[in-house]
Length: 277
Image 1: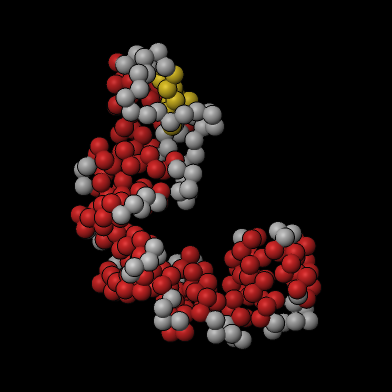
Image 2: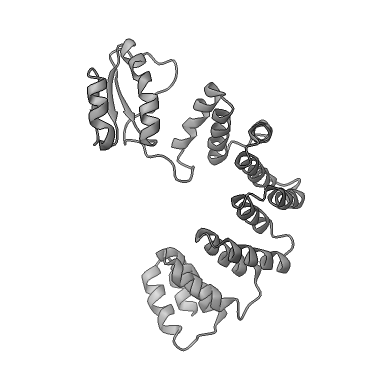
């Protein structure tokens, strides 16, 4: 088992897995081995097997993090009842488990039980006050207010976080979406650039080697590539602003989905459209 763990730590995942799998035939109830197998299944993105090992683990251990991991898997499967059950079990074992309060609040937000979600986040804030971890708790509170259509309250939290020096890319992007909901388009579209930030989860892909167009740059005679990165409805809505680039004497190339390609080609004949980069 120690050898299998060492192989995992050396990122020799396949070798670690083969050895761990072999060991599991004779060490069915070994907590250390089962924990390793859950890590290996996460590496393989085999979440069905990971859940199997976690369900085995909770029969032999009362570690809060095991119940939290199982709850998260059920949450990702949209099995909210099971997710709540295991988050609550983790909290009962570890009453200061901040992550569980926050993730459980997401489950209640999905169910539109915002009062319960708010109470859980306030508990997380209470546990993290005076530490850097408080930033994440306030992020969750702002997200919850945004989902509850309380955009002004969400923006107030984001504004205070930014003043405090917190400019996490995911948070800045979420702030952008709130600004757009409040019709604060200048702020919203400016912050929306955080979708390209390398540290943002699920960041939008950029074409390699091309710079992002910045404000106040003279684009006369410049080649501008525009990516239709949102849905086709948004592309059709925003396409009307492309003539503004033409007025600035820029040369425009636009990548869009093939479903709207012909429509846009016939509508804007002085712009080059394509559905491939």
